[in-house]
Length: 100
Image (cartoon, rainbow, N blue to C red; front, side, top):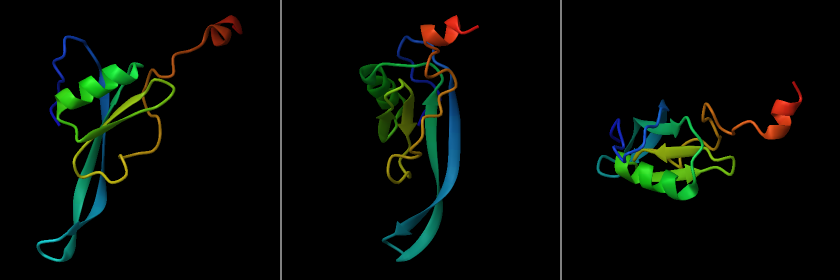
């Protein structure tokens, strides 16, 4: 995945990498590879998530119902991490702001 989607929008994101076991069919052995995912900090629509992740070179993407977007790298199994980890998502609702 590239470091910038260059789609005309300015997004900040965080990168999460972790080891995963991958079966090497050529050597018939297990090897360790890194799964890398990008989380866009800001909430996005499903379509903007898809477009942005495709432009980063991600193999797949996951859009969470709170608006969080995860771009998934090629060596990730089961779409990376099954957890919304976007820094500014979900956005605070107006009810949360009224409680202060």
